[in-house]
Length: 514
Image (tube, rainbow, N blue to C red):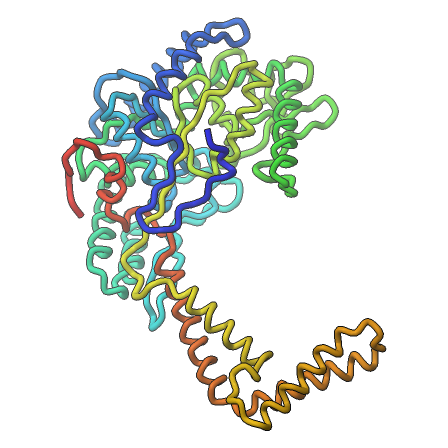
């Protein structure tokens, strides 16, 4: 497999990055299923634990989809493919993972989308383009959450707030004179209004909105579950108990894997890709959060095999094989649980794939297992806003010309006698500067003389210089506008879902058009 560190984000509209190719996902997942089902962890057959974890995930997903008013997916069969993300209004390069998941179900897999509602949500909103003379991006925020507040702890927006938010976005995109964007925004507003009565949190709202827009194109065939619900299952409790009962060894494996990753990839920041677990005497930090009073807090246990979990210095429960209400996985711990106990192939974006190399090492060192492969998928889609080709090269050429007019004006003058004499003197000065025997004062005098000669040589070129400067300013504005127009980070609901389905469509018919 290609090292994910060698991969880079796609830049052109419609360009998709995947590893391995989508056509190989099911064969990779099937091979992984056979490998993991034959393993044992802490003396227990992994196959039976995986069957339990999957049954519990489906049970939670069934209840969630039923409450949201969505039909449940087809009967379970085939290898399991999973992906997930925070329930924000993310860009289509993330949304494409959900479409790939649905397509994998069509080829014979079981699909599971994991809504990471346990992650911190400082604010929930969207960045959209608008034109006020020039094209610019406007950030609009519906919900301000504050630090440490997870998606699951915030209630869904009020209907009036959602309508006002959508009206503000509509005012923005209406300035672009692209009617289909207004239509898509109206569709998203209607989908959100449909979801509001049946969701219980901001995290659920973001996820249900996404699924509702997908369902407008046809049946959505994958299961969906939130991390907050998945964390309440007995299988997750068993997984957490494994880590807590050997917290010192997990702490050592976790931090060693992070340190090795930073060293291998020349990462200087101690918080990238995420911080090391802490230790203070007998207290060892666990790779979980505890959600209490609407905020995520770190948790610890005592060294020496204790399974009692402490938050803010107080015991909050014991991990004895069952779930501990309020306990949530961190990023590495979540993918560790999913890749080990739930799915046969996990689909990452590029960022997640990079940090999951750390997870691979933890799987080897702590569990003694060869890590299963994961897939990488992302894409770039642009809104139809660019008025011209990318002007970066033209701007760079004009800027280079301006520099040459400043420092080598003699190259742009006619071969007249006065200009030739000044140019010849300039180059005599330049050659003289190369002498190693020059005194500091002599070097300073030559430098000043060269500047004076360049100024004299530029005098006949002032009109040309002003023309180039005017061209540069116009190109600078074009570059800025093109950057806004080709931004890949606009919210998914402004994009045509059929464009995102197209890379995975083989014999399936187009189910809707936008």
